[in-house]
Length: 324
Image (cartoon, rainbow, N blue to C red):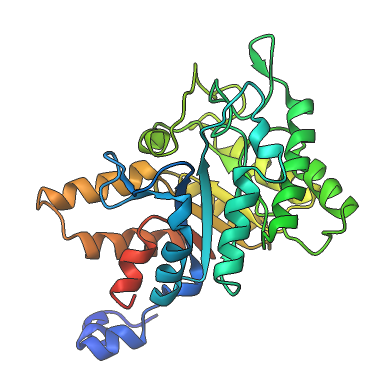
């Protein structure tokens, strides 16, 4: 029979801070964090994002200074989202060699070459209707959109992107992007698939941050939050299409899905702690009802414990300023 109390005392290994630290099973490091930032063209000063206290739209003309500051903190990877002043029905600015996607990718890579640049590949920030692709008959045209995603990915890779991260949630987008990248000579550029992306209510603050003009919703192409088996299937399909990394978005409400994918796939796995998750923690901390730093560490630790190798979080600089 196995030993039990009083022979076994679990508290022995929690007795001192040194013991607790040395036996901690799950660790956070700077290399595991990706910081999403919002880059707006045509403005002169940073714009505070009301729904995400502490976050700003960074002016394109100040992007160099901002990424240099982040790199000095120890940030190793960044995901830029563009706020365009040149929207149209198809998101055409994102398909231009001198468009915002290519410009901000090139600016970051030139300013801090060692920083891993992971541009978000989508059209929702560039379309007048706020959807993730070309609209035909009131719906996003899947096959036309994935062709455009391939074109956008090649432009981003040409501008210096280290990883391509398509978030449009269209069927076949990974295979289409892989084909486009390989055909343009970027066969070494990996794809981080937003492979399990839910139609979540937790994206609200992001839509303010990104200047989304969404008409309707994205439930025709993003996943039903109630579907666990389908969530696993989506990621496994992206892996079969050639994804190099998988992602679950949002993170905290979907730790079960994260753990499911971790059990079924050997690919590196990312999780996105989205704007609503950030806002809930930040606003609760402002009211004094939680210890902000402790909750940030606990929630990111939970995401890591569930299986994430990489976490996209707006708290990345906050933690780096505190030495992790």
